[in-house]
Amino acid sequence: MTDLEQYLESFDIEPGYLDWAAFGPLSTAVRAESRADAELFGTGRRTSIELVSSRAGEARALLAALLDADSDEVVLQPSTAYGLMQAIYGVRGGLLVSRADFPSLSVTAARAAALCEELTVQWFEPANGFVSVDEVAGALTDQTTAVAVSLVDFRTGYLTDLTGLRDVIGDRLLIVDAIQGFGVVDADYAAADVVCGNGYKWLRAGRGTGWARFSERARARIDPVLSGFAGVAGGLAMDEVPPPAPDARAFQVTAPDQLAASRLATALGQVQAAGVAEIAAAVADRADQVLFLAERYGIPVVTPVERERRAGIVALAPSATDAAPLAAALANRGVVFTARSGLIRLSAHAGTGEDTLVLLGDAMAEFAAGGSW
Ligand SMILES: Cc1ncc(COP(=O)(O)O)c(C=O)c1O
Image (cartoon, rainbow, N blue to C red; front, top):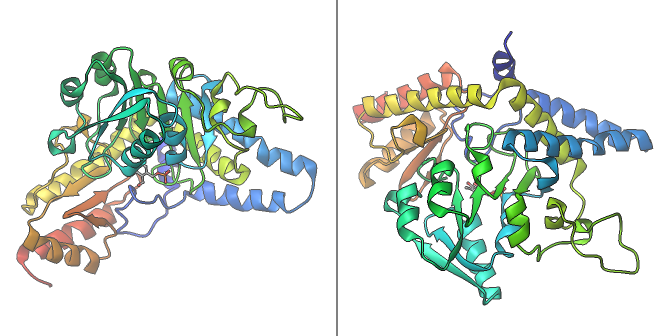
């Protein structure tokens, strides 16, 4: 069995699940690890506690390898939004953000700017909500010091080009919310300064498995204003307040959740063994199949058709009168999806089986035929 086949074996979901962009059902390995760790944590044995706790370091090392970074640039976080807050609250100058981006960026930017006069949010409204290289190039000003963007847009599935963004922004900071692509997109993470994510979607590790990477440039320019007692150099500070640590630990508040970190390490180990490029190709194939079915049944999509500009999300854009019947046909066939602001978001993973695509095809055929069979 190849490593990819072994990875695919760890999907044992029920047919119909096309909502990986909302929540990733846990892999078999993550579930087994989680059960074992809970038992170890119940023993009261120091060695057992240390064994589970050591997995936080393993998770950081695996993240560093997948991000093409050093492990001291990586810090575990409760979630993506926490990591982004650590970065954005410390930015000074003009921060370019798309109004249509996920609120982990837009709300965080607005709140941070409300607190700090030296930070201004430079809102922009890219066509179709796609934060493309050209859109960013057109929106930059001399005041822009940082650009914050989602790797994969949660609504449309648009996959931005990190290498291209780096080329146009020069040495400004590039802050990336990677939750909708990390582990399933072979992206140029080294082009970014801050990359944040969480393991509860595409990594299949459950919540609490957030992380962030801060490059040397990020650490030089971003004040760790939300740094907590675990973010100092050395051990526990007694009777003094030391400065923040020089590495990415500066951007943490307290110690990570060891059980969550262990789930994350297990999930990342699976990704590393299978290979991101191989997983990405399998995910793109599944998205191809979803797009094929949408075209076959005449359902408009807003996701780019080019493979290099999308990942696992395909967003259908039925007309206002078609939205309810289409959603009903999908639900009737047991297809699990997210419907929001007129779009029906389908998100397939590498382990999405043919059985799920058959259900999807049947539901779309029923919708196209104009009724139930
Ligand atoms: C693009 C994007 N960013 C951030 C989040 C929220 O991430 P977290 O719960 O890890 O803070 C989501 C959740 O759907 C998302 O789609």
